[in-house]
Image (cartoon, rainbow, N blue to C red; front, side, top):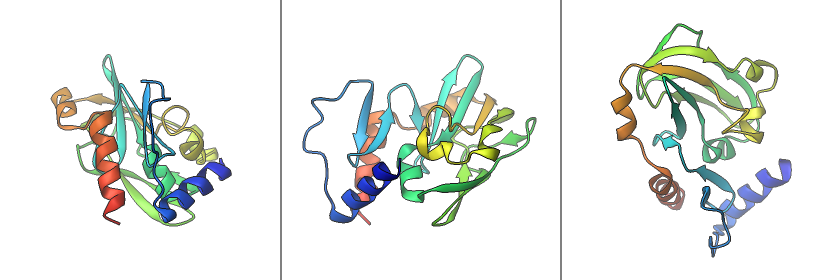
Amino acid sequence: MALRMWASSTANALKISCASKAHLSPAFFLSRCFSTVLDGLKYANSHEWVKHEGSVATIGITDHAQDHLGEVVFVELPEPGGLVSQGKGFGAVESVKATSDVNSPISGEVVEVNSKLTEAPGLINSSPYEEGWMIKVKPSSPSELESLMGPKEYTKFCKEEDASH
């Protein structure tokens, strides 16, 4: 993990990009060479992802976001039963670099929080889309998912955002 983070940071600093993606599985795309963007998820421009399955949506921060944050050392999450609103903060992620608010990509009721993150906040770095998920929400307005980006749009968004910095 440390090597991957170093490689990603170095590639960003040197403005190195991937020349070819032809060898990649269609199950994911890469933004900035080392950040994974998964198919089947929706993405907010504040770098959170959401996976809607049945009546529940799982939310976390993207690989791109965790890479920019650096090593995550603390995570603040809401209590189950609380409400979240699209585009509004529901928690925070503290890294060795900074503390950042985490916004909800959709509105709804928090039905579960990832309690593993209390003891192992680094799961956000090592597995942002699986073990490092943050909350599960029962959406109150599933149509909000339509306003989010798909993987191709998010990849393009990240490339443009990185180029502007």
